[in-house]
Length: 280
Image (cartoon, rainbow, N blue to C red):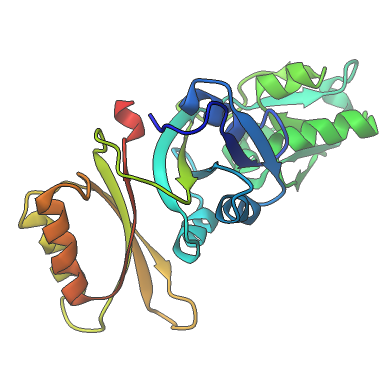
C-alpha cells in the first residue's frame, strides 16, 4: 500500500460517484480527498503540478479493451505508475423519479459505458444515445436540468447519492465486466511487494527487431503479461509498444533485461513497478 499524508488528494476524471472515484476509495481503503477533473489530461496535470498527490485513470476494460487516451498520456507525462486496482462495473439505467422506460428518448453516458451496454441500447426503439464526458456527471445533469425524457447509464452509487431512480439494473452486455485502473504519482518508489512493471518502447527499423526486443525477457524467464502497439505520431506505420511484465526494477534480472532492451530499441521509458491488482 502506498504511504503518504494522512488524507491524500486523489484526482479522477468525472463527477463525484464516478467509477474512478469508487475505484480510488477501494484502492486506498482509508479517508481520501478526491478531486474531480473534466478530462483525463486534467488528472495528469493535477498530479504533475502538485495539486493532487495521486491520480487514478482507467486503462483497460475487460469488454471493450484498452483506454488508449490514457496509455498515450502516460507516454507524454512525467508521472509514474504507483499501483493498480480493478473493480467490477455494473451499469444501470437511471432516470429522474417518476420517469418510465417508455418515456425515454435519449440516453447519456460516457462512450465506454454506451459501448458496454450496446445490446440493451439496441433493443430500445426510437431512443438516441449521446456520449458525455462522464457516467456520474450524466446523472447529475439529468437531475439538475430535470430532463424527463432522458436517462443516464452509471453506477448504483451515483443514482443513490443524486436521489435518482434505477429503472433497469445491470444492463451491461456481459456481467463479467471489469475495469483496471492505474494509480499515478509524481514521486514514486518501488514498493517491496511490487510484482509487475510497465514500460513503453519503440523499435529500430531492422529485420527481427520486435522478436529481439521480446527475447530479452524470454532469455531471463521473465513472464510477459501484456503487449500492445500504438501509432508513433508523425511517423506513419511505425509504433510504440506498451508492455507489462512480471517482476520489478529492484530485481537484477529485470534490470539486466531493460539494459539489454535499451541496446536494441530506439526509445524506452519505464512507467513504474507496482503491486498488481490481481494479487492485491
